Picture 1 (cartoon, one colour):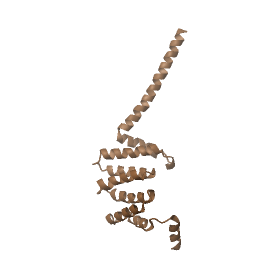
Picture 2: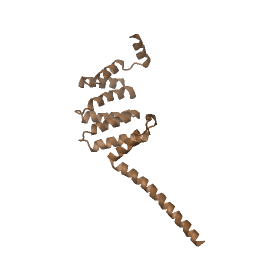
Picture 3: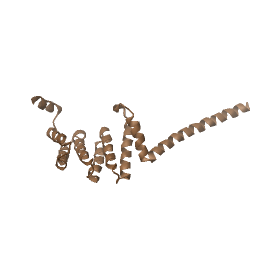
Picture 4: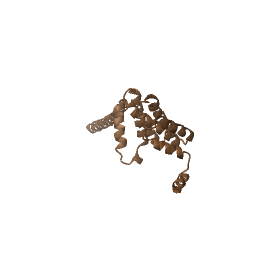
Length: 181
């Protein structure tokens, strides 16, 4: 009987320590991911983009990835990838319906990397965020015009011009105009 009690206690201790090690291992894996920004980006990109259905993307994971893009860009502000990561962060934030945070990321590209090939697109997206997400036609117009003035040869000038022309119109008005043509 005494051996049975010792055996049971030994099994219980082994089970508890195994559970603790498992929990500690998971916590260590998460800390490693959180501590290394580049690894975190790779991890969350794999997790998010492995899902073929974009409507099933985990919102928390997407926002974490956005945060890691920003952290990496801030830590590596001289790197040519920094404006790209700010733009990727803005894209996620726009899709997660976080327009103010998206504009902050876009402003980082516009203000700190004006010579970057991403700067024109960031300005165009800023106008779009004001128009589509914030429903602020005054600022949308302001930034579409600024975009057209600063980048008259950009591939998105036609889109900006059309957006300006249709700014504030309801879908019904747009349909009516299209049918009248």
